[in-house]
Image 1 (cartoon, rainbow, N blue to C red):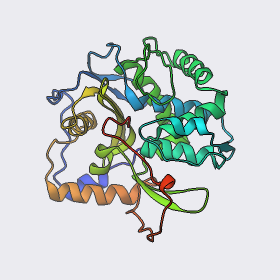
Image 2: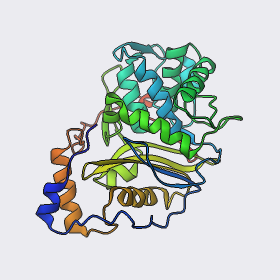
Image 3: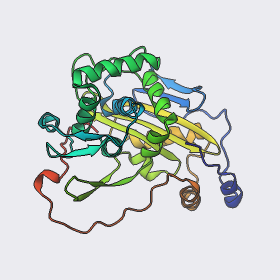
Length: 315
């Protein structure tokens, strides 16, 4: 995805001055952090970037990359009972129904359902175990030397871990994939079930929903991993990626936004008027900007069509 230029906006507002390149990074609290230039891979900031730790659902970026690179996105994926045994966050898809890889990948990156991750993995490799082998092979290809994966969704399991440095590498690969880089920008998705019913899914990435310069990527949470977020952003012709692992619910989204602002050379507090102008301008020139949610007529949904979640959900 090409980052829209904001030079016209800067001229228009007269107040969106870029930070000096020597400005120190903001005070943030994540356990492991990596900030890179999305195109060159240049490291802009790091903290405990090589500490091996669980990364929860952020590893669905690797799952989606493997499936997307196989192509044939219109291929039908049939849902099996074993897929729906995956708790806690899921779309409750009915066994025997089918969806395209494209639709399932989109739902996976917007809402993070674990049953969708399992269905895609099983379709791609025959089993979750064989898909894990694909994940580890792809990780090696990407130069992720301190990671090991056991499942496609990031649910807690022994011997599964990654690092902030390694996650920045898969994030760059996702960023470079035209289909995935557009999907991660979707803020609201009207997901159509096989029987025609529609449920609106809201992206779990609050940093993207609240900040015009954030262009997606993926959230994650388990009790062991804590709150995790891989986020991308663009402004003034520059694109960056922030990996933030082991954070708190209160700080992860706001800290990630601060790091994106810093890496993009944007002031931490530009004022509400300038922010509104920036958001309006960016949404106008960004071909992947998500419009306001379309109201969905109220219908009576069968219970199995209601997406489920839990307080310790993996998102």
